[in-house]
Image (cartoon, rainbow, N blue to C red):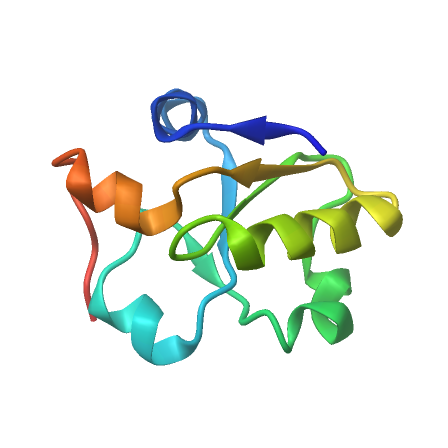
Amino acid sequence: MRQIDIDQLAAAIDGGAVVVDVREPGEYAASRVPGARNIPMGHLPSRLGELDPSRPVHVVCASGNRSAAMTDLLTAQGLEAVNVTGGTTAWIRSGRPVERG
């Protein structure tokens, strides 16, 4: 499984990366990586068609555990997926900006 840290994610976002947050809607609304799209873990298998197979998908959760499982799922489906280690928690702890609401 391909993994990156939050510094690498920040650089990827600057380059227009696709970021999918697999946390539950309440977690997502509380604080998220800017530009991240919410597709909860339990919904991702039925919503694969919403993802562009020509672009890498950077998968984030709270800490990296759920996103690791979903990165494996996406990879098994033929998508290029990247797990973000440390997740949103590491993003927030680094002092980077977040979106809310």
